[in-house]
Image (cartoon, one colour):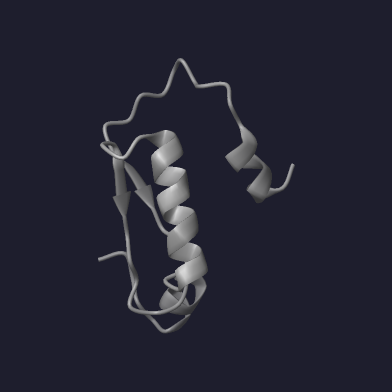
Length: 68
């Protein structure tokens, strides 16, 4: 299974019910469009979109940033 295949999952989990789901997609238009699409599928009220100051999470950590 590839990561992209997860977007096609339709069977909801009965075990995990997080109050918030944090999405970290690329900061370009395509990435943010996909983040909005995923948030709409999951539920806008539960999603938090993390917008990084760099294009993607790999560049973010590669530039020396940390989780703090």
